[in-house]
Image (cartoon, rainbow, N blue to C red):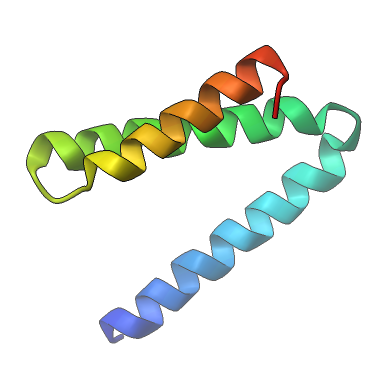
Length: 73
């Protein structure tokens, strides 16, 4: 299996998982989005710490996370 095939399968799995979460938690979609932002922010924080991520993206994710937490965005 090539790297592109593996990447495609992972992305398809993530999309399927997101669709399942949307169906299961349609009344509480805000918490699903908030948890997704938390995970994305933590991943980007690790990437920045290891030197392969951009701090600008981390700043944007952090701002989105704060907005989601306070219910502004």
